[in-house]
Image 1 (cartoon, rainbow, N blue to C red):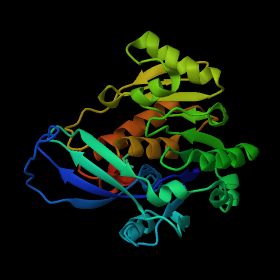
Image 2 (image 1 turned 90 degrees about the vertical axis):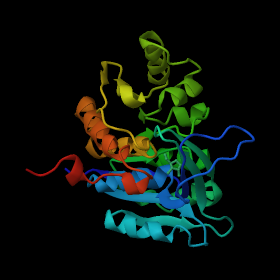
Image 3 (image 1 turned 45 degrees about the vertical axis):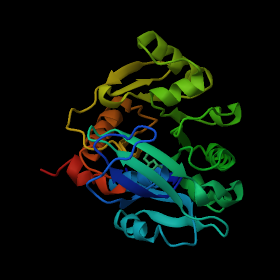
Length: 305
Ligand code: RIB
């Protein structure tokens, strides 16, 4: 069965710089390579990842009139992504992210939201019929919360499963938290929401209980190279990550989410299988530089015999 997925989120042009190490405040450092521009944005990355895993994917997003994100549309089309609801803002420029990656593959990201931050509940209404027909809708926090709430309300009215990746980390209103079926934070994002640091297994369980008590059905806390901890009211466990040489972790989380939603079946609750597939897909992304450019295709993750 091909999943129908709607991704609501940001489109950014990533201004990418590779450095040996991070400069200290006040220090000037030479770099060997000039700045690269890549397709990015947590929404666009997750949409590309979902579409490359062969789910039927629609992307709701907003860019400026400046045309700087035009180069990304070729990649969207190549992945078979429906971009009918990628709108153009009359007032704001396309979002941009300023990313530095050091020799160990760590990244630092500054995001200028631009057009992403002009997304309104009315914009989301334009895609109401596609949301209503989807199996899953996924959002992150690089577009305004009122737009996400409207999308999740439409989803709930039509029995569509809602998935929130609460990134970048932020506190959230109960209005949004109670509209979530599946939440996928990393440790830090989980702590910001629950107020409980993730330090060991008991504190992990307390984090999970915080979300389950709000009515969330499935909680996945991503733990980087340690894998992913998952829980429902009935079960919990850890699915280990794949060990590979890390070049750049940018968009690894986005790949994980896109691959997970392409494989997850909430009726069958095949959580471990979907996480393992998502971990495998993300292990390809960390071996290359850049966001969309490093996201694998289904054939790479599961080569045909
Ligand atoms: O998750 C990675 C993404 O975060 C980058 O592509 C950047 O645009 C920021 O949104």
